[in-house]
Length: 93
Ligand SMILES: [Zn+2]
Image (cartoon, rainbow, N blue to C red; front, top):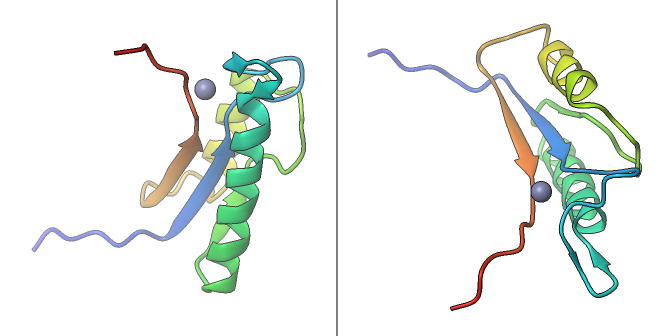
């Protein structure tokens, strides 16, 4: 068997700060992704699953810094996974 176990979860909230992501009326993607990411992080902690959050506030963060934090979260462990929350707007059918 070539089975690998997940050693940890990195949780990212898409957008933030000056980057609102998708906008519809007064709804901003960054607010939903932050809420979802903080909830996921808290639940994983409650379940005893190793978790690192890339950011927990409405932070302005560059792509480079986001990736740096993701890679450093579990010291580059290839068995850690990244979940990046996005709630994109779609086309209409
Ligand atoms: Zn997005």
